[in-house]
Amino acid sequence: MLTFDHFNFNVFDLEKSLAFYKDACGLVPVREKEAKDGSFKLVFLGDGKTGFRLELTWLRDRTEPYHLGDLEYHLALAADDYDAAYRKHKEMGVVCYENPGMGIYFISDPDGYWIEIVPMR
Image (cartoon, rainbow, N blue to C red; front, side):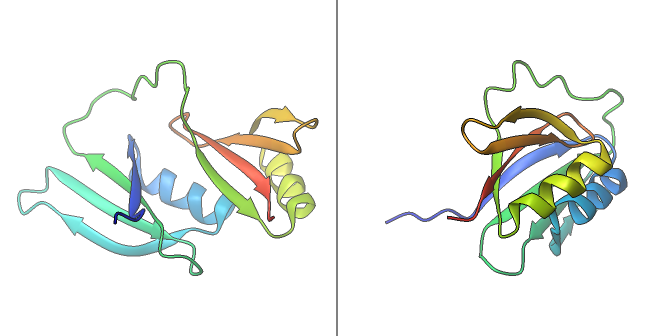
C-alpha cells in the first residue's frame, strides 16, 4: 500500500517562494535539507493539519526562471473559509483564473505554478 507523502516544485527565488506560501497559503517549513556543498536546498512545507508536504527545491546554479510549459498540472488546497481566502488572494493580486461555475479558483506563485483553491468539503 502506498500513501501520499509530498509533491515538489522547483523554485528560482527560495525566500520569495517561502514568503508567498506562508502569506497566501499558511504553509510553513517543517523540514529542510541542504547539500554539503551548498548546490541545492530542499524545504518541505506543511499545513499543520495533514501529513502532506510541499517540497520546494532551490538549485544554487540556476540562472533563469523555470519554463513551466502549459501548466496542465497543479496543486490543490482546500479552504475552510473559501470566501475569506478568495478575498485575501484577490487583495494579494495572485488570483490567475476563476471558475465560479465549479466553485473554484487558482492562484499563481512567484514561479508561475498554479494552486487550485477549493472549498472544504
